[in-house]
Image 1 (cartoon, rainbow, N blue to C red):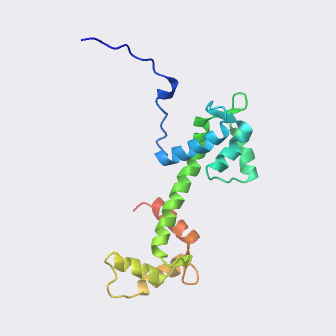
Image 2: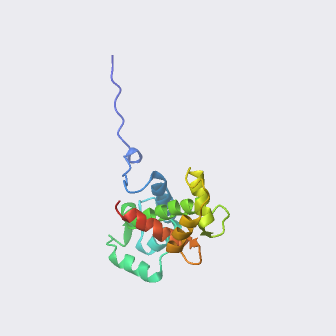
Image 3: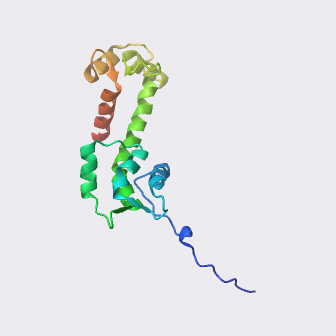
Length: 170
């Protein structure tokens, strides 16, 4: 019986930091965007590159918001580490994920890609789920009337309704 000498752990095998508020796919997306500007593979980018790295991850902030971010980010030698970048992007990524979820839900109702939902769409989904076997649209017309305009609910109105129902306790 003998023991092999242990190899020293390389920097590459160092355990990656986890970001519990983000999915693995979101962290991967952020890492890819960040690495486009981390040309030296140092784990840092120049502060002036931060808005471009944010844009590469899908966020297009207005100029005023960019100035606010750059003013609040504390850096060493005008360099921004990946962890700081992730911290700045986390609220945006969570919002983006929520928006994607709502867009998928909206498309389940708007199967014809009209850009809006009407009472017939609600009735169809209710029937698919086993409700509304009688075909009465009056309840759905009332729901649409309360939620939208002109007997229709567009995506923005749908998104607001979804946010309200998620934020309202039962």
